Image 1 (cartoon, rainbow, N blue to C red):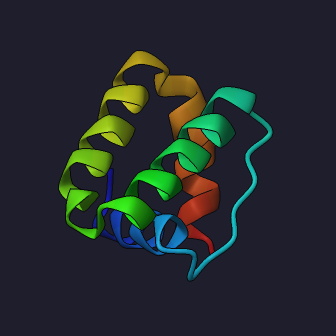
Image 2 (image 1 turned 180 degrees about the horizontal axis):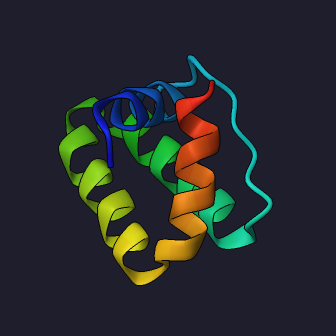
Length: 72
């Protein structure tokens, strides 16, 4: 995951950027993590770890979505 992708994912989780994936699982994860950040603003590192774990389990999905996220 590049620095640009990481920065944009943080912005997505904070509600500063909008992103919708064609992958339902990623959309559900983003929604879950947004709620987590709203209830506990200090949980960003843990949320980023969950995104990294998702990308390890689904590298093809992550590759496509991370390219789209980097382009935001």
